[in-house]
Length: 637
Image (cartoon, rainbow, N blue to C red; front, side, top):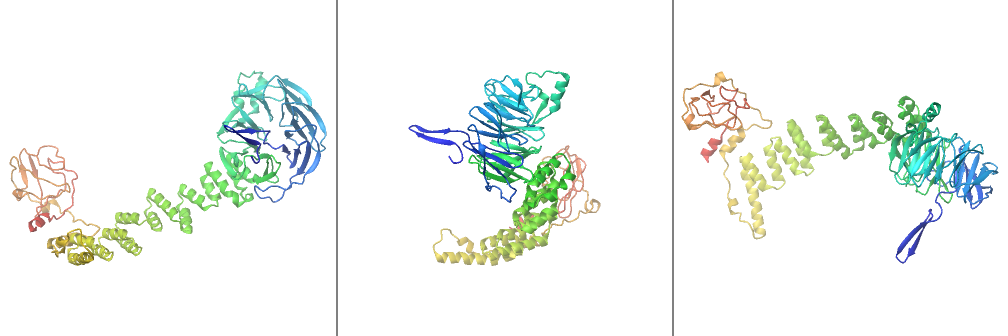
């Protein structure tokens, strides 16, 4: 496969994939940008210049042959101070001076690791680990580990028990034991944080406190079986499958998966999504503000990471917002959006709103902070219907009716506007909406808006204009009887036209008779108030009611409807005071049998409840005065 050492073999019963060698490039870079790599046993070097490269662009290096290596190296490791380079391969190691490429020391080794101060290095042999200080054997640890890792502490991992051990470089003191199978360990520059990349469980961010080790040594306390538990604390656990990584400063961990990302403050952010997992990080040069990566062909690529942005994020994590704001002028505008997302993740939403330059992000933040003026300005500038719909939902949640009206108008939510204007009782807006909807061809909205506005003639005209003569006839019969004949004739003409065009499957003969308008319906239509309904005020009881003496016989009753009004039966007219043991039958609750109660009524035989009467618990106690013509309709019919 391209860029990796994988080979697929076709067999009679399937395929087999095998890996030959390692994919990691035999290449190393020091803190000044000097790169050393090997081809077979030949050593080449080049210095990375600060040029204007695009992210992901391959660098053009000018190789210079540095010398020969006395073994076939599989790894090259610079010491932290950049003065020495260790070549490892074939069970041996050789330490060379980086500038002159001179042999400093050598020996047998399965694995090799530098300490963070370059004064110590460790060599792993078959059953022991040798610790050297200033190129002199300093201490021996009996440990048959499979792998060793460098840094502020020496780390060893045993494959047999899957345990990771930490030791002090100076005296070999056992510090901590962790149950994990590491693929790599990366330390921050000051040694306060480390990343353990697991072989199967993502990676872990831990903090290390060296004062715990000092306290144990001063007090002469012997560590327990698991070591000094207080020395390490797990800060975060991530599921990303990391191939390699590096710490930049003390708060940012950059790593490669199938893309280039960095971890800071408990969150992961993407630097580039176009990075192959076969790339390995060489190092970061602060003066260039770029991180450099290489593949197994020793081709170098770079990506920009702003130190000012990392410093800004560090100040935010330390709750020093004033210092963070002073760095904004040094950060490019293209990085402000990612910086605003970082601020949002840390709970500084208002600060993120001031920083971001992306309108979509700013709109979301403005809604979260209920700063509607900013959100409205963005929605207006973009003429975005979707944003107006979101604003309408927010206005509804905050009961901002004027804003809700504006948002529904801008988002063309006419159905919602009809309900809103109807609830508000705004007749002019309903009529305006009806005309606007009719012009757009939205007949249903136009009709409903006009109907809610009480413009029945206008509703009739809209039905006629749209060719709905059948509906217009029924509508006129119910609401404007004087127009029934006009609609019916149009409907009749339509039926006759259909008859002439072919045989009808339905008998329409009963519909060909001209209807007669109903005088009482017209009278009721004139009496019914237009929208909104205005109720007749209740006349005081003293001026309206009279008392009569009469009694209720057994089996007699009175019915009251749920609106609070009801016609008194014919045999009760002229009698309003009753006594006896028979309670009134009513949909209202009656607290006790009625022995004597005064029932007020007016000259139209209409009961009016104004207050709770003696012996009756009627709820609700107050009703409007209305005129009922149903009995008259029945007599006419």
